[in-house]
Image (cartoon, rainbow, N blue to C red):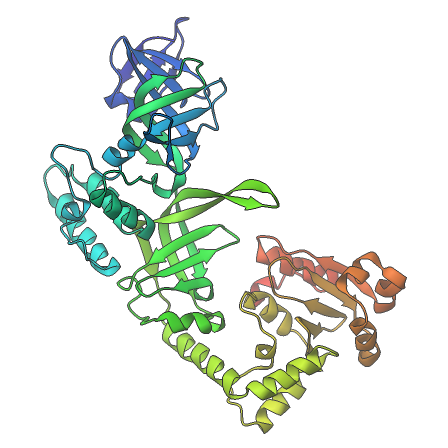
Length: 481
C-alpha cells in the first residue's frame, strides 16, 4: 500500500491496485506525501515508513508495569490485540511516557501543577476547583490550545496513584512512570520495528486516545469506600468505578467511620461521566487473568445527589446505633433463625417489647452488607407473611413460597405454597439448596419445588420470571419498580 489522499472527508490510503481505504483522523497531522503504509490488522493497525523513520498506529490493550531491560533502561509492554501479523507487542520506553503523559524531560520542563494554576499541596477539592477555573479560562481564550494538556494534567493529578507516580518522577529521575489507567486505546508512536518483526520499539508518543464511552448510571452509596479526602464508588456488576471529592458531594460530610454502617444506605447517586477502559492482571487459581473495568475520567465526571440523601444518612446511622444498642436481642434472634424460620411479626413483637425505635425492622437482624434491597423489597410487598431463616428470607405469596438470598451469586427458589407451613419448615430446615436442586431423597418433590430463577443483569426480567413461576400476571411489573 502506498500514497496518502487528504480531503474534506478525511484521510485515505491509496493502494497499489488503485483502491483506497479510510485512515484514522489523527493521522492527518502526521502523514506526509510519499509515506508508505502497511496494514498489519484492521484499518487502524498501520505501520508507516518514511525513509528510515517508522511510525505505528495501533489499538493497544493492557499495558504492563515498567520493567528493566538488559541494557539497564526501563520499558513497558503494550498488547496489540487486533494485530494479525507477527507484530504482537508495542514496547515503549519509559522516557516516552515521561514526556507525553507527565510532561517531563521537556525543554523547558512543565509542571502539571503550574498548568492547572495550583500548588503541590492542593487537596482533591482544590485540584478540581483549579481545573474548573483553568478550563473556563482556556475556553474563553481565542485559541484554546492549552485545554488538552491542562485536562491531561488534571486527570493525572486527580488519580492518587498517578499523582504519587508524578511526584516521585519529579524528585527522582530514576523513578519509573506508570501508563495511565493501564492502557486500552489508540496510540501513534515513532520508533523502530524489531529485526524479527514481532515487536515495535516506540521512542516517542505522538498521540494517544483512550478507549472511552459516555455513560449515565446510578451508583449505590452502600458500595462506596469512604476515604479521608475522597469517595470511591464501584459497581461490580457493570464493572464501573468513579472517584469523588468533597466539592462534588457537598451534602455529605463523611469520615472513615461511615464504612462501618454504609451498607444501610439506600441512596443511589446519579453519575454522568466519560469512562475509560482500565485493567490489571490478577492471579486466580494459578492462572493470570486480566480483570477489566471502566474508570470515570475526573475531568468529565458529574454527579447529582437526590434531595432525600440527608434523611437516608440519618436513618442509616440510626439503624447502626440501634443494632448496637440491642445487640443481645439481635444475637438471640439470629441464634433462633439458625435452626428454624422466625416470622417477621414475631420479631416486630420482640422489638416493641424491647422499646426498639421504628427504624429497626425485622430484616435488619440477618441483613448482610452486600445484600441488594431491590430483590428483598419486590418479594416482600405482595407477601401475606415472611420469615427469617439463616441467610435467607422466606416469602409466602398467594400460591407459592419463595426463598431468597438477596446477594450476588444466589438464585431465587420457588415452591408451591404448602398447606402446612410448620411441616414445610421442618423439612426445609433439614436440607440444603443443593439437595433441592438434585432432588436428593426426593426432597424437592416433597417440598413442592417449582423451580429456581437465576438473576441476570436485568432486574425486571428476574421479576417477570418470578411472577411466571408464581402463576401471576407479569404485566404489573412496572408497579414494583
